[in-house]
Figure 1 (spheres, rainbow, N blue to C red):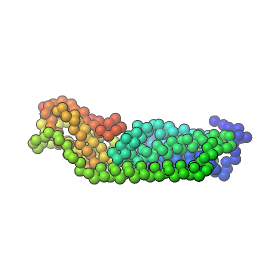
Figure 2 (figure 1 turned 30 degrees about the vertical axis):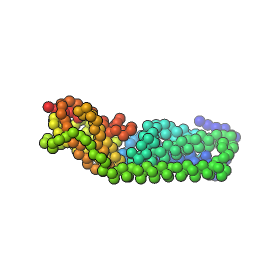
Figure 3 (figure 1 turned 135 degrees about the horizontal axis):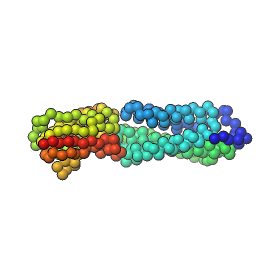
Length: 273
């Protein structure tokens, strides 16, 4: 995409408006958030690609602020929010139930603000005047302070609430088991937002599943058994003994009940006679 030189104001001095400064800052923040996410769940190639592109867009916007850079950055930031919309909703609905709620909420606010700023900066450069004069006035500064305060407050509530939940012993699970299991237990590993073993096998009678959660976030082990729904909390960096009354042979589905997790955290418990 090319633009007539006559239509482009001189931009050799770097970003000169609020919108032109906000877009590269938002892109850099999103890149940092992706690094934080991958510290928890491991390296994910699509996230690496997004992160590299965000860094490149931020650098280009600061070094050579051209219209196409801001347009591309704005569209990319909005697309990133769209792709991660299910996780963002998860964080909004469960601000203290998941360890990643604060990153989801911050990523959404920053991505939307940066996306709008990128498109606004593109229009500014094309027509040579600010799109929103309020962003240069005290009103714009007040709105920016309010947005930053909301992000800090949300992050604090999310992290503090999640920490309190992690430290709680909970109320336990009424699992209907009335005698100690005599069969060899099985292991289920949770290194991230997925179960390493998709199929577990136990015999009928009381049985135990040791769920080893090495993830930095809490999860759950949910299963429908004997006409009842059981849900075991799986604190981060902990092993939980899931004791079940396996009265009848069959195949039983188990999963993580946190919103958005079941798609990658589901398996089958095969109970043999």
